[in-house]
Length: 135
Image: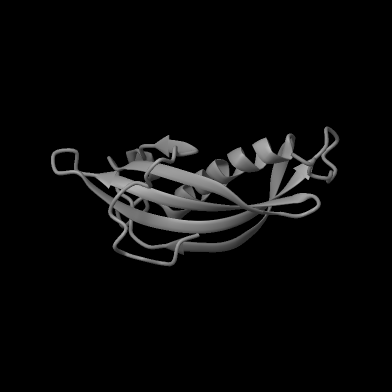
């Protein structure tokens, strides 16, 4: 994960987001910003995508190792979630997720809004931990 930097003002070059979504009014907290729990849920989904691909099986979240909210997210922001596998254990996959918001379509601005690291465990068809296969 990149160091905390409030000057990230562009989407990552040459990378495709694992997930891209636009929050709706129902996703707001009482202060009028997107509820942090909504962002956390989307980060968990985005992180599970590369974890599942690498594990070649279903996965379950076992740890949220870090989670930093850097900027608020608003209704109408186009939110992109970039997820990368950063380490493997015998049965676990650790993923970094970076979240960017594209704001104001008339005068586009991109800001990094969240960074997180999550660990997932690979599961077999009975829901038991299983080893991560060699690539």
